Amino acid sequence: MLPGANAIAGEWGHNPLPLPGPEDLPLPPCYCGRSGCIETYLSGPGLSRDHKALTGEDRSAEEIASSGGQSLLRYIERLARALAGVINVLDPDVIVLGGGMSNVESLYAEVPRWWGKTVFSDHVATRLARNAHGDSSGVRGAAWLWDELRKP
Ligand SMILES: [Zn+2]
Image 1 (cartoon, rainbow, N blue to C red):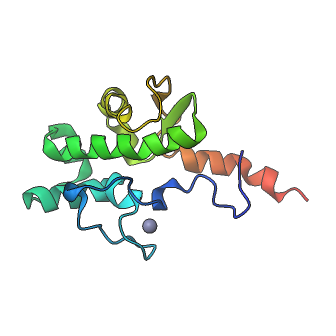
Image 2 (tube, rainbow, N blue to C red):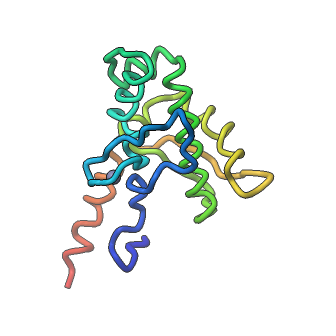
């Protein structure tokens, strides 16, 4: 585990979405006080917000993901762009998705088709994998650390 000097290692969601284009503007405000954070695009509420901006329709992330369409394609391309930054810094063997959006099956085939455009390599061997313990695996992992962190 890499906690980091500031205890924020892995806080990827509040980095700015890389290489924003006209379709990413205006940068959505984030609850952290900044605008354009990855989380404002790539969370379930972020997908719903973007879909409403694109179509005027109020839809849940689940509805958008199950129907496909332009909003889901925008989501896939943005996720690929954002994960390419992780690959460029950490060069991991595998990236495991968590959270509610990790239930969207098409991400695992589609996102790796797009991330090569931004990864600094001609070949990307990193795999994108579904979590093994459900979409709250991050919380589960934190709970497993509880006893370890309480030791003097
Ligand atoms: Zn933020």
